[in-house]
Image 1 (cartoon, rainbow, N blue to C red):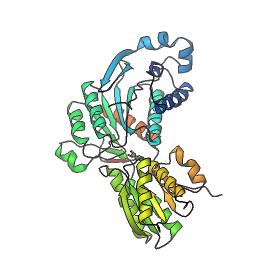
Image 2 (image 1 turned 180 degrees about the vertical axis):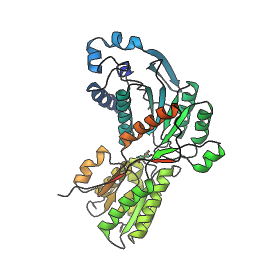
Image 3 (image 1 turned 180 degrees about the horizontal axis):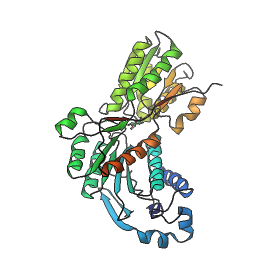
Length: 367
Ligand code: ALL
């Protein structure tokens, strides 16, 4: 199913959304519409969206656009594309995760500011919805988009479809989660990676935990998707911090980036190891589940938690010191960067190796 798909090809098309059924969709629509209303220009360069609406949206904007239909199993979404502008498909993971919600908003805003391309953003149903990502890539190949910017849910499973895209002449930019080097070689492709140093980021968070607990502190890590390179790198980075800070790692399990799963995985850990003093959650969504479990166990304030992403939902938790630290990887900029690189690559610029994006440790504010 492609239920969580959003196609926001241009600021114009925001007015043409089909009504979505779930509260999440309604929330997303509201947020995106509000943000876009306040600034960006009409995709055909005819003034701000607000002006365009007041002067009749259809007359001033839609007439200049070519309307097409993108069909994906389970959903049909109409989108408008300017015939002269390149079309870029943005493939993300779960839009229930604020990290990707921010990424999508950042990308839409950036594209509206650039005004020289049509963006088709696609989000998934869950963090492990690999098949839907594969289908999205296949659909973008069929629809002959000019470029695909992708945050792969799995570092190996997406390599074959992306190799097909490249062989079909589509520019591919890999953001956020690096694809597996060996799998790329086997598929006969070389592809740059635009994303952060996840190992270094997890080390920063782990060091903060070590500072708070001191030598011998008993810690656990809740890992992301085992098939994702960034999950593996964050585990290695946390191990680095455990070693450097002489902490004791007593357990390590995956909760596949998901809040609810992290809540039950950590509750079980706590039953098995009531002496846990510190937790690294490999993303903030899972930190939310961990903190909920700590509160439910009555150990609030006794177990230190660090996360990764710096999403809006953890801001109050940082203030309350329920979250000791997190790592900002500037998700709202990441896809925007990827889009810029895709545009450059379309003009013939060669992207190679690892194009590093910034990370920053965010700690609970002092009272
Ligand atoms: C990763 C991101 C985030 C995020 C996770 C969930 O690729 O870097 O940390 O929370 O995906 O899918």
